[in-house]
Structures are given as C-alpha cells and as structure tokens.
Length: 461
Image (cartoon, rainbow, N blue to C red; front, side, top):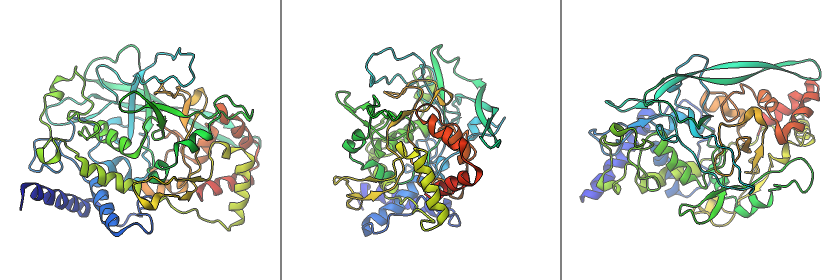
C-alpha cells in the first residue's frame, strides 16, 4: 500500500468512525437527507461528506492527522455544532456565556460611513486589527481565547389593530473579558446566528442573470421595493461578481462559504483560505506560532481539496423539505394573505437552476425557496454595525423561507432573523421595516383568523 493510499484509507476510516460515533440516528434530519435520485457514487460521497461535516476536530499536535489543526482560536469543533442537522443556531439566553454558544457569532468591522456616490460601491473593510474578522471565545491549550460576553434583551410592545400585544426583544452585548486589548475605536459588531443550510445546492445554481433581472435598485416600478444585487470581488479582485450566501450575501458560492467557515469558525486551513492559524492577527503572536495540522498528504493543508469537496457535496445535495398541507384550505387562504401583503415581492416563491452545475441532478430544476437572493433595506432597527462589501448596515439578503416551520424539529433550536432575536415567526414579521414596512403594517391590520392562516402557510413551506 502506498503512503498516499494508506493516508486516504485512514481519512475515510476516521470520518466513518466519527459518523457512527457522533450521529444521533434518532433525530429527524429534515434538512440533510440526500436529494432523491442522486447517482450511487454521489450517495456514498454524500454520507462521507456528512461524516466530515459532523466530525469533531482536535488541536495539533495529536495522534491523528485526519482531524487535527483545530484553532488555535475557534468558535466550535465541528460544522454540525452550529448547524445541527443543517438547521439554524440560536441566540444565548440572558446572562449565559456567549463563548459557550457556538451557533452564535460576532463579526467585527469598521463603522466608517460609505461616502461613495456609487450605489454599488464595494467596501470590504471587515475586521479589527487586534481580533480579526470574527470574535473567537475558544482556544487550543496554551492560547488565550479572545474573551467572552453575555447578552441581555431590552423589550418593547408592538400593538396590533385588534389590540393584541406582542413583545419584541432587542439583544444588547456586554463584554466580560477582552484578552487582547481593546477593539479599535472604529470597530463595531454584528451579531449573527448560524443560518439553516436548506437547499444550498439549488440556490448555488440559480443563474446570476436571473438574480440580476429581479433587481430594481432605483424602484422603477414604484412599488416601494428596490432590491439590489450584492456585488463582491472575485478572488483576483479584478471583477465584480454576484454574492449570494451569508446574511449580507458576501460570498459567491457554497465552497467559498464552507471554506470561510472552516477557516474562521474552526481555524482550519483550506485550499481557498490556506492560513493554518485561521483568523489570528499579527497581535496574537502565540496563536500564529502554535503548532498546526498542515500535512503533506493533505496538500500541506488541514482541510484538503478532497475533504472540502465532500462537505460541499453533502451541503449541495441535501434536499430541502417538501411543502406540506398543499390541499388544505387554511394553507390556500394563508397563501392568499401572503400574496396580498406583498411578502412575495422579496420572498419570490419560484426559482429555476441553470444548466452548468457540477451535479447533473441540480440542472434545470424548478424549486420554491421564497427568496430573490437580493439585498433589501430592512430599516434601522435591524441594522448591522458596519457595511459588508456592497451591503449597507440596513441591508440584508432575503432569507429563504422554505423549511422555516421545521426549524425547531430539525435542530431543537428556535430564533429567527440574523441574530435570532425573533422567538416566533410572528415576531420576525413585526421586525420588518424599511422596504418591508408596508407588509408589516398590512399584517398588523389583519384579524386573528387571517394572521393564523398566514403563519400556517409559512410553517408549511
């Protein structure tokens, strides 16, 4: 047996061992079943990819080179810890250590105002010089974690037309320790809960032309909705391309999104992000000088091309749940309310993939994600702490609604919107502002029966 073959055998054995050790087969995986009809060889790779997605990484040096290289600074030890069964994360409860909740992240960036007169000006000024792009509350032995924090929530009451009162909560962050000094004066934070990974392969293969065609940045049709494309740079920085993943649509593809998460969430080097010290900065010298898991048989990386491909395949070929209750009268009446409230202006029901996917099964597929993949102004109450590429603080990419009613069943967690502040779908609706203000006001005028029908429809998607 050659050395390369031997190492590959250990890798596959390792991920299989991890799969059978850590997968809870009693939990329904509504977001992580393979698409029906995928090729047999893809089906085998799908389950190996799921095992890599679920395996727990360890710091270097360790007895295995297939799973080491974690950190030195990190948020979590596995992809699945943030996306249980491909589902959503949740926000910490009041007073709970933020570092102990891996599915909740803090992004760091500059709060400079965008003064460019160009609407699509790309402003990738993300990060803090001491703490990097993301705050990491976990670390390898001998390395200081970046610190810790907790949240409190301030509340206010939204009163509906029939007198119903709904309590909404706003998260407030309180730092308990900052182990590498203060942030820069211009640094601000954006609080994020890990998103559900529903139907990512289908979203990845929507032709860019289709996304661009739905944009109306100057609101030429005067409907009050002016979705914008999230333009980002390609890797060479010489071409603008369409961003489509992440709350600000700041990454262009599944592999870019997955490899970014490997690098910043787990501190692992990948083909696109080869830094073995992850998000460590030059001010965190012991972090940079720590042992890493780069191995020659893994192309001098910690997550090599093969492991990256397997996770991409698993995420791409995971099937979104089918819509339910389609013939139910309440579903149909809720659908009518959804359309009358103009929710479908941004949450466009139907999309179609193109013809160039690396997986034939994803080509020419019509599907129902309920998103336009565009940026929309959601109002100042939901604003992030800084601009992200061409997305202003008020702008967020339209979240796909498919599978929203299965969130708790899938991951055991609830919490909607980018930071998980909304505990119910109704709360999420009532946080809508900016371009969605009219839809929110329409909802507030509905009677209880029609509100229930709309929620029933949304929970059935």
